[in-house]
Length: 210
Image 1 (cartoon, rainbow, N blue to C red):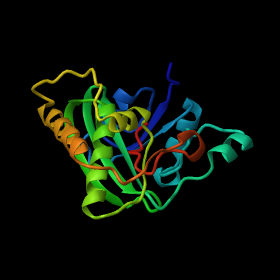
Image 2: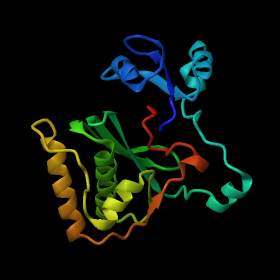
Image 3: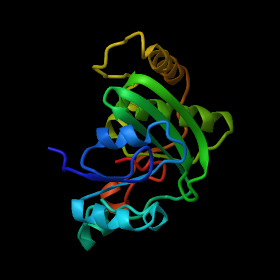
């Protein structure tokens, strides 16, 4: 069972501390320049709400502590790379994805919002979008994803989603098919690497909504 998280909204339709993602989403979805962040405990969230968003932006407050031995075994990420991630409000729900420079977090691409889609679909589309972009500009740097499922789908060139096609998700369904065709027709020169969240914190492409 996933551990419960608490969400602080500093700027949104309503501000405060919320104990579930759905309630938080109601405050920030389509709200321009919304400011929000997740925390492990209600106490941490309450303290954060009294402070400023800028004091917590980019900090992984939900990072898991590992032993020195575990950290040494995992090592450090290759910052000369790009990172991709997806976010989904509901699952299925409103999905979007993006790719950034790992070191600087400079945005390379961003797509969405796609209706009635899942986070796994977004992670897969983000990876293929990155591969296609990198091939187009002849960039052979590695690509990081924190989704083992998406990495496996790209490796096996198959999407094992149980999300049925509906009138609302026609666009993302068509993108899945185009992505699969691209994978069948193209070699992949870029190394696809797993982002070790427990050791390194959230992936640089993270939307900050977890």
